[in-house]
Length: 293
Image 1 (cartoon, rainbow, N blue to C red):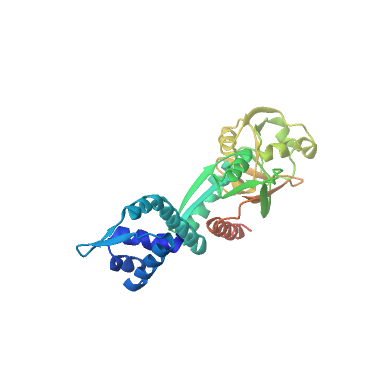
Image 2 (cartoon, rainbow, N blue to C red; image 1 turned 135 degrees about the vertical axis):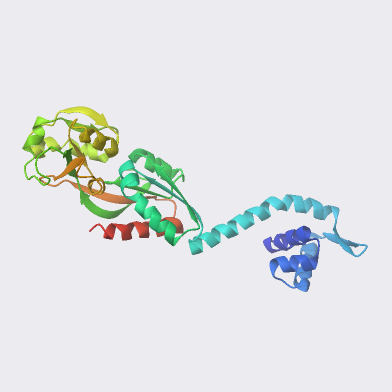
């Protein structure tokens, strides 16, 4: 049986008549009859018979109906997927991003995306760098966001914006924009643990600042670092997205001299073509980033 045979056959079985199948498939009754007759000719046995004026499936027809039901459901799913890929107006989008991007930037992006594509359901996962690559490769995420690049051979980065790092200091620390970092030597550094890419940059700070920072507390997220800095337990370094959201009454943002770059990237799995939902989400991200420049 061809796929067209199965589609028409299922419609006749569901509606109980040739005319009902025609209405369901937007075909004429004669067109439905021709498809069924052709299927029966290919198979070599009848699928239906007339009993007291009613269309009744044969034993063979009943067996084929049960066997083809699952295939028909998969066909409908395939049709819906194809439609979603074309329109991008429905379906599901799964996003993975590190905490700083999830908390400080993505809420505005998701709001704009939901307004443009209200029928797309979004799933946002807050993950760390290594977990993002795993989520993309296992197809648990369609698109990922992180600072800096990746060395994973199965992940493709898409450069978005070249930002920079900033010092986050207690509110009582000097002026908001201070050209020298020397006073930071007097208070401890709140460092970062795990595979956070900013943690690697912190290792270079000693050379750039002219002193070796003393690390007494290490945390995993810039949100936790902000809370500790606000309590005057030390200073830390944050990305440009986090820096622009900080409240001056709680902590002070200070320029780093010399600057340390903090590039923002999107990521896709190399072997999987990006879904239309992910591509449209990336467009919204790029539009939101233009507002920051």
